[in-house]
Structures are given as C-alpha cells and as structure tokens.
Length: 308
Image (cartoon, rainbow, N blue to C red; front, side, top):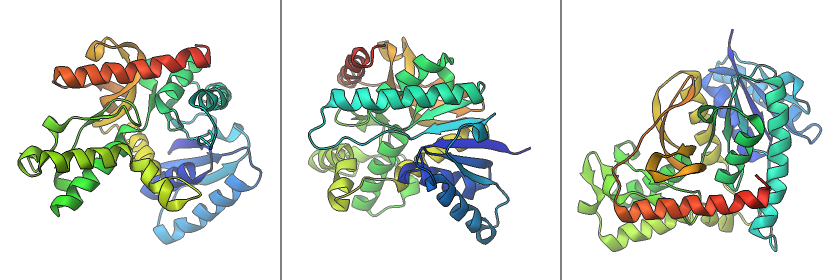
C-alpha cells in the first residue's frame, strides 16, 4: 500500500508541492482547497501528466477532508499573504484562525500523521498547529530553512561559478529579517567561503538571501515565490516517507536546545519516519547565539496575539 500525502491549500505553493511529491512517485496525493473546482482541476491536470512521467500514483483534488483520511504526511500551505496596509498582527490573527481550522480537520481524519507547516508567519503558525493538534513536537514542524538555505546556496554558486552541489550552507532562526546564515559553517567543497569571497561580498549575498522572497515579489508584481517553497516542502515530506534520516533546517519546537525553551525557531534536524528524530545543536558563536535568541523572542511575541 502506497503512502499518502495530503496538501492543504491548492495555491501555487501547495500545487507545486503536490506535483513534486507525485512526480517522485513516493505517495498518493490529495490536494485540498475551499475553492470549488480548483483542487479538482489541478489534481486532474497532474493525474493526466502521470503517464508522461511514468508514475503510478493517484492524485485527488477535493474540497473536503474525508479523502485525506489516514494520511502519513500533511503539508499545510493554507493562509493569505500579507496585503498592503495589513499589520503583522492582522496577518497573524487571520492565518492563525485558518491554521487552527485546518489542523482540527487534519487531526480528525489523520490522527497519526506528521504535519509540515508552510504558511506565514511560519514559526508562529507551527506553534498554532502544535497547540491545536496536541501532537508531540517531533510530528509538527515547519518549512522555511530549506528554502532559505537553497537561496543562499544559489547565490554563492552563481557568484563563484561552481556546482550548486558543492555548496554547503547553514541558516538558523526565523524566516525573514531575523534569519541567521552561519558563515563559519558555509563552505564550497570543504573550503570556507571566507577564503573565497570578501566580507563585503558575503554580506551582500546574506542580505540578498534575507530579502529573497521580496526580490521575487517585486519581479512578479502580482504574486510570490512558489517553485522553490513547493519543492522544499516536498523534500521534507520525502525525508519522512522514505525514512532518509536527512538533516534539514526545520522550524522546530525547542525545549532547551540552544538555550531556548517553549517556542519554534529554525534549527537543523534529522528527519525520518517519526518526523524530527534528532535536533542538531551546532557550535555557533556567542553573537549568533544571541541573534537566535532574539529571533525566538520575535516568535514568542506573536503567541499572545494568537491567544496561546
């Protein structure tokens, strides 16, 4: 019997994630959205691509949660983007209500699943999903660091004209201005980037990484990134379904690790069949540690807005 992945939200990120999971041939996919016809149409389109790709998986689009029953992994992409004139608190309140409703339905139909949260503000939405689901922390985590690290790797590889596969980066913290690229751990085939790039150039690449989503929004005018976020989410689902024990940066609920307790923040974690199977504590500088704690406090400040 094949595994099942349900993706909640049939927008660009959710649809990209669903198609990538299907393309890998590792699970049947259910795509859920409240808009009638949207998940059904996208799901049918994906299903009709299956013969061309040579994949024997079932892809279902639906407006209900019944078809998601007994999912192994559920990816939550539902939520609205921040609109002009909307405060951070407004966004948090709106999306937390959406995530609360989605999580209740997910748990009702798939009480043993692992939840991957993608919607923003990412770390706060993970906290809401954990609070509502009552799942252990290893089964609720978020995708942002995989995306941020991919952007960082991309910009370094382009600058040095090297293979993307030779670039290793580590990004901690929240998804946004508070993310922390750990420069001391970034290298190209083992060579520290500090030996390959000037400090000014590294700082420039770091800032471009932090502004990565905004750069794409500015170019698209009427949308935001979805290919990279979608495949990043699919990679996390793959690590769980195939029990890959892959170390990926995840938004993770910390209980004392890195000196942080009771809040979600991005750190490297080993993903396998049980979700987060180990949190990796890096040897970071005191300055980086302080930045990470500040990032965690930013997330903590949102909890009262959500009422948890």
